[in-house]
Length: 273
Image 1 (cartoon, rainbow, N blue to C red):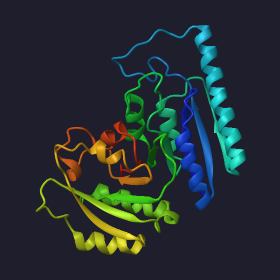
Image 2 (cartoon, rainbow, N blue to C red; image 1 turned 30 degrees about the vertical axis):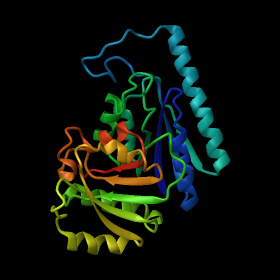
Image 3 (tube, one colour; image 1 turned 45 degrees about the horizontal axis):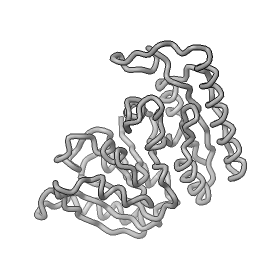
């Protein structure tokens, strides 16, 4: 049985992510641990360039009330769904480092693509989400609030060690999903480009995914990646390291960041270090 963490801050309960977890639970049960974070605390959570006034008593009370509301919603829905669950709200100063430390003892960490600390910074992925995705010691799954159902898997492949690490990690962690229609996606900037080591990836993927097809996606610089992503709300996209790679060299931003800015597919991010 897997242990999955669902992170929620204040009253930003991630309905889409929880719907995804309910869907997953139907395939195979797991232990779901809700990690409930209070508002960021100066010096402990904020980047050095950002400073806020200490919250007054009324703000602190509102924060506690908001967290308790999310905990109650999480508990009620978990019971209704028949999920085994735990609740972790260790302190009113729960920081990124504590969440990262807890990820060391989990198989997967789940975040909302739109709501993670949206009350502090609405632009996603914000500073806090980036920190979690970079530092987490287990794979991270980001899920859009638009999520309704999962019907397809997409494996992003560029021949790198990191892209293969993510594909392997996903197939080991979620064998129950490997029978879904699965695309191996390789983005190219020129129609003459060929994916590297095709014989090897074909041999590997065919052993682990039973409904497979390979797609070269021609990258037109006039067509933004977000336009493609926003139509894939029924897809789980498997992505390698949080660093840039050859998958989309034309983009200045991180591949994962660009996808999260335009919520569509659920995004499974795994890195080897």
